[in-house]
Amino acid sequence: MSDRELPPESPISGDTISETELHAWIDGELPAERCSAVTVYLASHPEIAARMRRHRQQMQLMRRAFEPLLDRPQPRGVLALLAAGSRGVLWRRRAVTGLAAACLAAFLLAAGWLAHRAMPGDNYVAEAVTAYRLAVIDRAANGVWAITPEGLPGTLERLSRRVGVPLKVPALADQGFTITSGRLVPASSGATAAQFIYQRGSGQQLTIYVRPTENRGDSDVLVSRHSGGLVVCSWEDEGIAWVLVTDASMPDLMAVASNVYTIAAAD
Amino acid sequence: MDPNPTSFAQAIAAQLPRLRRYATALAGNGAVADDLVQDCVERALSREGTLRDASRLGAWLRTILYSIYISALRERQRRGIAVAVDELADDLALTAPSGDEGAVRDLVRAMATLSPDHRQILVLVGVEGMSYREVAELLDLPVGTVMSRLARARERLRAVLDGDVDQGLRQVR
Image 1 (tube, rainbow over the protein chains, first blue to last red):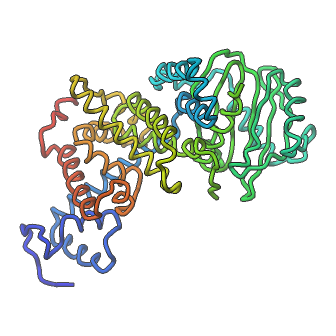
Image 2 (image 1 turned 90 degrees about the horizontal axis):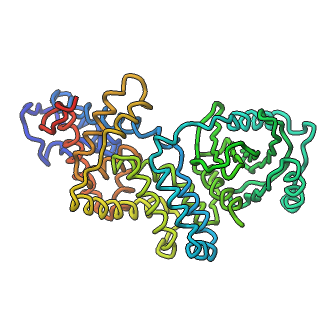
Image 3 (image 1 turned 90 degrees about the vertical axis):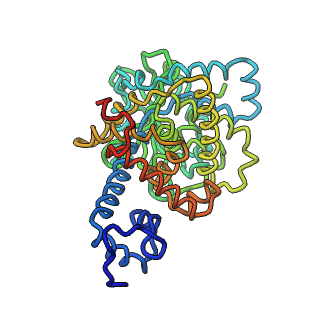
């Protein structure tokens, strides 16, 4: 490193420290052998050092400002589109019957998501999170049915009668989950909810909580974070509330949500 | 940790939260961003075959989204329609950590004054936290070009925020 003092007004030129090197230094992308040269240079150029501090603050602010968007509701139109897209031929048939257009219209209506952010009056999200926590604590509680992927269709038929709505949940093998059990849970509204419990080899758990709701309409697909690193995705569809709760990542949750939505929406 | 979802649609769904954040930061408007994501997903579904490397799905989606964004922007400019940024500025200020509210509002407005390619590179590095190499691959540019564009974009943003150029921000307050 040079101990030659650079005059403060010296332009940043290629043979000293370049502007791009300073930015690489901000981003931690400067080769280690150049870092001390930058430190020395900034020490003798307080104005440039101040400007670089501003750059760094502004980039950190940008990260913080947009971070909360990751937890915002996803317009159901996109999930509907993905559900349709993953069913190939059906997608084209639906396009012909105009259902896809209906999905798009619903999306356009929902696009003003500020107006649609309100949580549903019904507290099924809180119920589902509590039920998730209980399922983690007490895997052998009363009323828990062991379910194998092969036995899933039969169980669904039985539980559908008890809950009063047609239950269609996928095996989730694509996402690395295995269904292990299911049970009925009393819901606050006096309704009965079904909870399906899935495990993954890495120790993560996921539950699908389904129950009837008073609301006959459709809602946005809401996502939220809860204590203990839980992420939750929920929506209402024609009188049925769906709540997915897991300690896996948000992207994993969205992939599962797309899968569940697709199965549930299949005719 | 990350099982590969066999379904293309589910792999896209896993990208949605970040794709939507990218679109919102680019467009400066939530409703415009949602349209972009919708169009992007639709186009992606119809072009699955053009994705050569499944591990680059995120970059591929961002490339599609940006090209839709640029044509939509041109169309809006041609028709003289401005994108309203205040709604997003106020919205993000609401979810900002306390003490950041004013700065977040100013930041969102300032970003809207930048050129789209400056905004894009700031979002890729600043919001998405991508490395220079990843950005270079995504934009199909040499790393040196990425670095100089980033330096110019940051300096522009700082100048707007610090009032070194007159962008009318002061009058807005």
